[in-house]
Length: 277
Length: 127
Image (cartoon, rainbow over all chains, first blue to last red):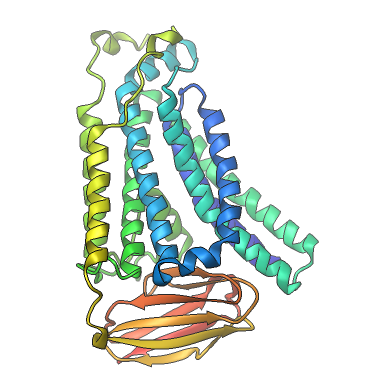
C-alpha cells in the first residue's frame, strides 16, 4: 500500500505542479477550466494507451522507441508552453485590467486554449502511464489486495493534488500586477527544463552524443532524488548533474521564449498607470 | 467588454516553427550519423527476476560506452532507473530494453527498480 501511495503521489505531484503553474499562468482566460479538464482527461486516456503499448513503443527504433517517444512529446510540450507564454505576454495587460475591473474572464483565442490543454495532456500522459504500468504490475502480482492498492493510490492522488493546489493558490495570491510576469517566467523555466529532459532522452538513445558529459555535480548540495530536488526539477528544471548539451538546450529555450514574449508584449497603455483606482 | 479581444487570436508564432524545425533537423542529422565505433562499445546483460537484478553488482571499465540489455523476466513492469547514471526507463513485463551508457568515470553508481525499491537494487563499479 505504501509503495502505491509513494509512486502515485510522486507522479501526480509531477504532473500536478505543471498543471498548477499552467492554470495560474492563464488566470482570466475564458474557457481555461474546460481546456485544462479536457487536457487532464485526454492525458489519462493517453496514459492508458501508452501503458498498454509500452513494450511495443520501447522496442521500436532498435530499442530507442521509448526515449524518442518521450523526447518527442516533451519537445511538443515545450512548443505549446512557449506559445502560451507568448500569447499571455501579448494579452497580460488587458487581462490584468479586465480582471481588476470586472473580475470577469477575457475571451481567448481557441488556439491558445489548445496549447493549454495539450501541455496539460502531455504532463498527465507522461506521468500517468508510469502509474498505470505500476498498478498493472501490482495487480498481476496479487501482493496487495485491490482495496489496499486503491486506498494507497487514493491517498497518493489526494496528497499530490493537495500540494499542487497549494502551489496554485500561492501563485494566485501574487498581486495581479506582478502575477503574469511571475507565472510567465515560471512557465518559461518549466519549458526550458522539459527541453533539457528531452535532450537527456535523445542522449540516452545514443542520438545526441556531443557535449554529453556532466558539467557540474551539485547532488551533494541538493539531490534530484530528494523531494525538494524533484519539485525544483519540475518547476524550474533543476538538474544536479547537467550535461553541456542539456545546459545549452535549457539556455536556448529560455532565451528564445523570453525574447519572443518580450518583443510581442503588449505596448504600454497610458491609462494603465492610473488604473489602480 | 469581453468581445474586445474576441478577434485577436495568437497565430502560432513563426519563430517557434523555425526553432522546432531546427530541433527536428538536428535529431534527423544525428540519426544519420553512423553509431560510435562498435569496438568502443561493450555489451552486458542484466535480468530482472522476482524484482531483483541479476547480476546486481557489476564491474565496468572506465571510458567505454556500454550497452546494457535488460531482460525483465517478471510479468510486471519495472522502471529501471539510475540518477547517478542519468537514465530512467520503463520496461514492460516479460520484455527487454536497451540502455546506453556514456563513457564512465571511475566511481560507484547505484541503479534501482523504482517500482520495487525494497528489492530491486544494484550498483556498478567503474574502474
